[in-house]
Length: 529
Image (cartoon, one colour):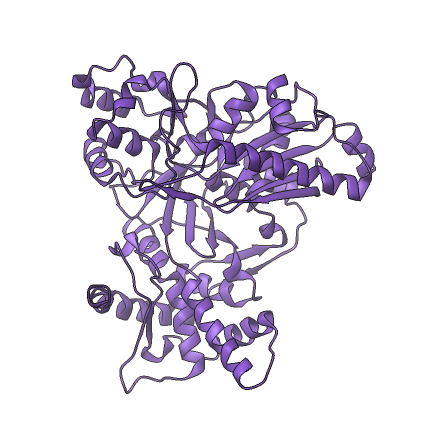
């Protein structure tokens, strides 16, 4: 069908994702092809010791993003959008948005970025025998209880950012299972919150005498494909300030950015995974069975259809690498040469592939900030070598490329070596993979597995939640979300796959031995600086 007609007849699907610096919206057709996009730039604020976004800014951003998308539709197709087949909303996971029974926000939104819940996170991890990271919603709630915060007695409902947006637009207090798994642990068998852990939490807080029990104030868990309500009249007016959007549009379960990333990279099936490498880096692997013990370096979340996922999240990835590339750019300019930045990245990245597989003895730590996976609260970027090491440009760049994935490898090695987790294919996305074949080759060496980069990898989470909205409308035709993505959305898509090179794998292992042994040097740098 003609694209213009598709939009006019509402045979489209909308996804909007609230990221940490950008709110992005994508309108797609039933095959997943993007028709139009819009965005809105925003930044978190640090207010009274809390990283937050105001609710006013949330709606200013949602409206701004949607208007920008409408502008794109108008310019491309000359059409006014009045109806949409279905829609979905996603956002960065975790954090704490708590409301009273009149739906008033009780304290400013506490985002995932806050590290103010250490006591609660460690007590709950011990109590549940399950890793509860500081950024999880339950850690925020329990820390507020430990702090004797006045507002806790009045909590009638708490949720994530995606859950809040969905509630305001549909009136439904629900959450997709992937996003819910970053609030509170999920029992994979039931697809709902873990009842044993809920009972433990209620017992822990019994003496406080709250009128609520935990199960009363958590959002209801839904799985991909389930209907999560529809856009209300008030919701339509809130999203579309022009007043053209009609109420009654079906809405899929709201999801977190981890889940939409999995959908956008076709990695929701068992033994698949994805690695997102930019300013920070994280990898997610869909597990075949539960882990044998608790690892503080590994978060357990779920896919949008409820399969167990091990996630390793590192704060640092390409920032130090980019800083060194900028130094070379500055040098070139000082020599009177203007070099295209993309070419500079390409030349330096490819030069790294000429280096020794173990970087010739050179070590780099890319710690712009702390790195919990390796036990650092603070960081200091550091490059170190012995006088006799092979110091040349190729080894220098290779060491920085290895360093960008080294903390991630330290976490993943627990899965691969301690837990014997097997993965058939990893999908790479993010800035590290832009230079063809280089980041991909390094990632394949780090994980000793095949790494694929899809052409659509740049579409991101807004596209992922749009796909989940489309799946809800088409699920009867498919055996599950994995089948739908593989055979409907990604069928026939060209991407490039790269197998690990034996010498690279062995070289990375040697580099990692020096890297882990040398963490004392990084500790000394942090202490001294």
